[in-house]
Image (cartoon, rainbow, N blue to C red):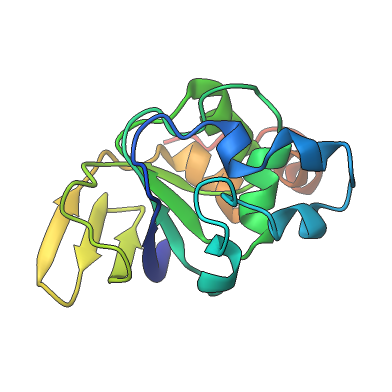
Amino acid sequence: MRIKGYARRLPIDDDINTDYIISGRYKFQTEDISQMARHIFEDLDPNFYEKIKEGDIVVAGKNFGCGSSREQAPRALKAAGLSCVVAKSFARIFYRNCINIGFPLVEADTTDIRDGEPLEIDLDKGIIYLPERGKKIPFKPLPPFMQKLLQDGGLVPHLLKHKGFLIEEK
């Protein structure tokens, strides 16, 4: 599975919590996730939503998605048209919520990724390509069963499609 998009960095790198992703105040204003998506990261960058394009990739540092376990945070990222988040590390429950909704995450060293540059991510090989600079950043590939969940659109669509977990024997 390959992902292509432009890197979008935030004013801070580490400890981006779910309230930064989508402020809790919107949780009580609407249940429409596409409406919530218009407000992603607005406490860090009020114009973030206007800057992004379909397929862009959020790039961050350590502990992305920390804080509450609200599923609205990963759902809002996906609804905003982002294709992936690449970070040095993720809060575990956020990571799990993303995979469950079919939104890819990549744990890699993001130090050398610049805001606005194109990225190509090969989830099978575990490589982030920075084509303008001819650079490669390795990462541990997602296990095949997690890639299958992503390809099927998340946990629930996977379970419905296969009438349970698809377990491939080798």
